[in-house]
Image (cartoon, rainbow, N blue to C red):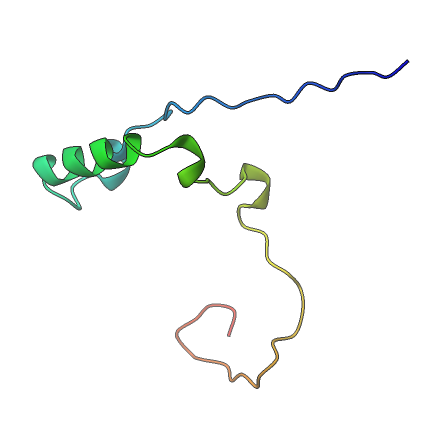
Length: 75
């Protein structure tokens, strides 16, 4: 017997409005227009970064030389 795997689909509805996220960076009219434009796109046109990937980076050396800078906390 083969078992059918079901794919879970995430809701395309936003959990937080763009107006709340932008919080004064755009005028009310501009943020409303931006939100309407984003919501009018197909769901797969905009892909969010997975929550598990937030704050993670690849621990590998860069392919070019770097120098420390005094204004960045980690050098």
